[in-house]
Image (cartoon, rainbow, N blue to C red; front, side):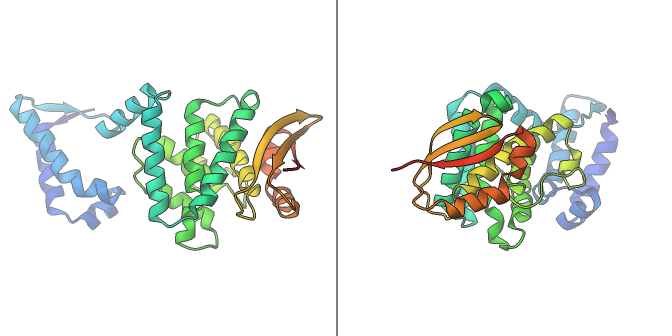
Length: 275
């Protein structure tokens, strides 16, 4: 869309006179966006005037979104860049005082399951990174309230700045964290109902894995280790060590593995090994 520079100049003047709260209410933007809007508009005006332009072409995405998309698409296999994203998630988790040994152990189990199920889910390395971020942040909402903490986790992730994650990736991580417990994804749910069918499937596949992983550390003992995974006769058989008494984890799996069965068509069976 072409926008006259004169009109943009008038808008910049109006915005600069508004308070941050007014801008948030009027335009539905975040506080960081509202704080920089006036200066950004004025910068565009001055650049257009410096180059003698009377009109500017306005796109539906920001320069920041474009940079993040370019960075993420170009560096899916870049271990350094992925490490920066994970470090940003760890900083956020520590900020909200999560049980770090628990979330790190659950994340480790989640990634082991993801790798073992590659032929089943056919997801990408980027999806694996989303699962890792969601695993580290799935208990973020405990900072707000233990009740419905999964929903609070979603809101905190959605409204936090995680370096390297654009809006779409942050939405996926937030939803995977949101569905690590309680209700299965429903089309009536906020945020989830805006996703494409493909992205809804991704949320379901990753959430199902995170639920199983979380159940395997139900006691928060951080001792369970997956030695091998077998798919046989409609079952996902998890050979694990570190469970002297698997009763609590078996109960947790009974409560939480329903989504996995729904998504993958496999019943989850826990098979403790000695040692």
